[in-house]
Image (tube, rainbow, N blue to C red; front, side, top):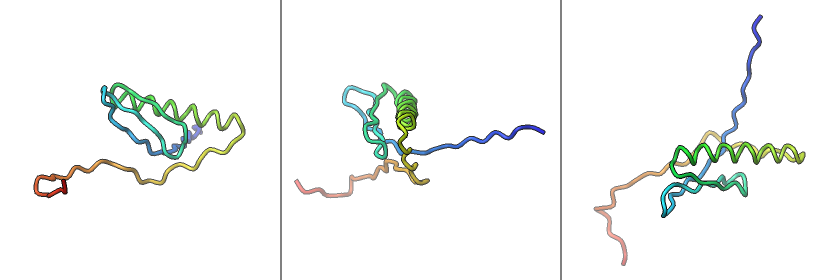
Amino acid sequence: MAKKIVQKVLRYNAVFEPCEEGGFAVTVPKLPGVVTEGDTFEQATANVKDAIEGYLLVLQGDGENVPEPDAESFTAPIDIDASKLRFAV
């Protein structure tokens, strides 16, 4: 009989903000102090995964509870054509 492999996945929402000099700064609202960056979106994503894992391992090592992961929701930018809108100046 083959062994069954079970993998638990935790989802934490990350906020990616474009930097003036290029790349992205990333924070994780549910995990205070988790801040990283990357020159590309892919690099920033890899870096934030490492930062989250490190943060959770430190919490576990200190005997603290791991924060509940975020629900299945996430945020995404939505672009609206504002050419027909009027803005106060």
